[in-house]
Length: 379
Image (cartoon, rainbow, N blue to C red; front, side, top):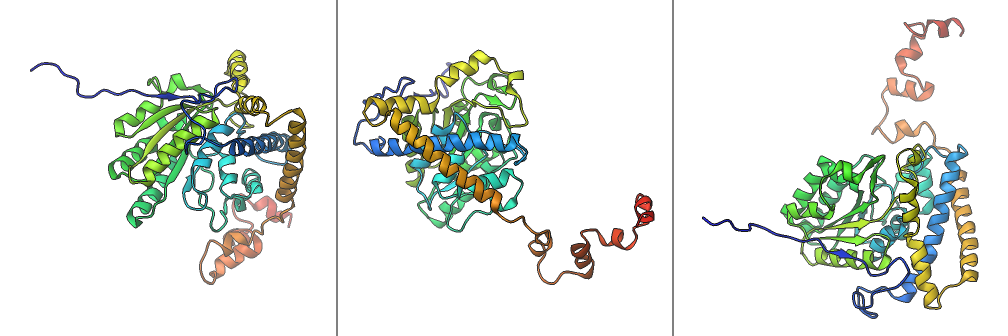
């Protein structure tokens, strides 16, 4: 029996707008559906300026003790915005992790909700009616299972809608990722798996937590269409996302996108990336910043200049100031909420006592029990 090839595959890499702001017209001809218009690009850049400023202010809020922690989105805005532009607002479902702020805002989440979340206020996770998304997912990889389930529901209901889920490169080493991929592929659900490969799973580089040359190739094992794109290229992200979303909407099943980008900031404000990252690597990626290349593109087309940049930065300050004011101006939640929104019906007497005293009934009734004698003696 001769040896023969059982299977072969290749991973395509897509870049349309290079680091100098020069676009490849052959890959995205003007006027084609997969090509962003100048108006879309201009509005996307303006929005990036606002998002970047909010990112910087959120960092300062944490450093000044006004917020618990915060994971910066800096450097990854094109991945979020490009994919969000391709999805239908109010119809398609976004299932994020925690570096897709721009996509969530574009699809209707009030900007101050993100700040509330990181301030520890659960009302930041109370998605408004009609906004199609789940709250931020902090556990790594669990949200991909949720996205697969949402997409399966769409298929069962025969609704022309799509779920798109975001995650980092490190999440693809989790079991939940593989379960979601297998389930989605087997049932051919309308789901797009969008990996933001920012090269670092906290302090572990991609090369140390997977042996595959690309993240995209992991989708091949599940029979999914897959592609690697320049994640800092708004045009490439939009085209790849649009292709995957429309394929899913038409019944073509799930797809995988690896957006190669870089986390310019620390993992979170609790991290110091200087301890494990080569500064030369960071400097090289600063030059690939999606905002820099998009500004070069707009400037070359006569759509942007220094005066407009200064004007937009001032607008961003006003917008972000109002967002912070709104987040910090919301009255603190009542401790009664723990009881009022957890238990159905009239509370048992024991829970009523806990609600009134904010102590368990046993402690409230017997403050002299073991461990609390000293407290009881001073009452």
